[in-house]
Length: 131
Image 1: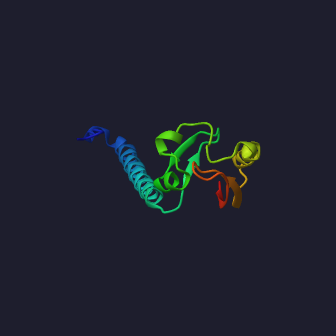
Image 2 (image 1 turned 90 degrees about the horizontal axis):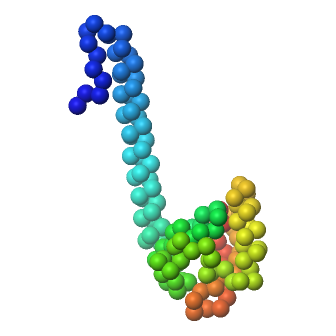
Image 3 (image 1 turned 90 degrees about the vertical axis):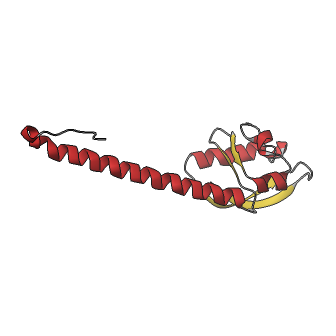
């Protein structure tokens, strides 16, 4: 249906109406492209053989892929939403929190070596991206 109605007597409104429609169309196109990109990236993470999980800046685990479940031994339902990351040993949590604060401040670490725990393995060293 028509979103804007311009009569012959009001042709001066035509340019503004066309501009609004073009703007709406461009916004919708950009939104669809962003949604498709997000879906594609989510599929890559979900199907990755690498353990990938994400935390919010306040430390809440917000995503956990199937490989993370295999590697660490915790299901997504056990950790997503948790404020305590079970993969970080208790004696390393302060160091990890300091790195999280630096990331929140905008610092990027191309590689980060961390001591991690899995449900079945006490400690292991992991080299990973930390952003």
